[in-house]
Length: 151
Image (cartoon, rainbow, N blue to C red):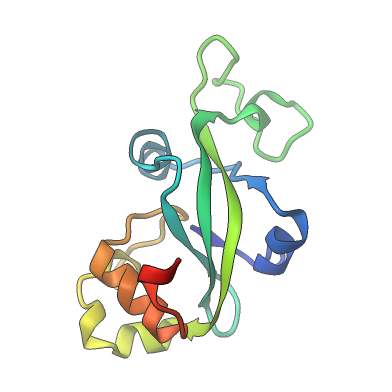
């Protein structure tokens, strides 16, 4: 899950203890949240649009996909007049912080041959929510100084 540090940084998630992941306005990313993310799943919390872009921590899904109510709020920057309570177009999940990682830069990820094929480093991949395979997840954990089996 990608977030710009100016919008919602890892440290804010830690301070808040829990948040809903709202504002996703890409159908493929929405489908990942709606169809694939399950309660208890672990996710990489990634800071994008910063120098350097990096994985900052690991969070856990605590509420499976449900309608993103910000799409109905005319005062929200995520308002969508084609979404409604009766016919929601967008979804979100709730997450909690699990563990902070030693910063893992995008360059380090790209240079690790064990991460070949990871969607994050594929050309043109800009989704804010995207899948990470179990083996890639374990490698990222290792790079961040933790054992994935101990989470």
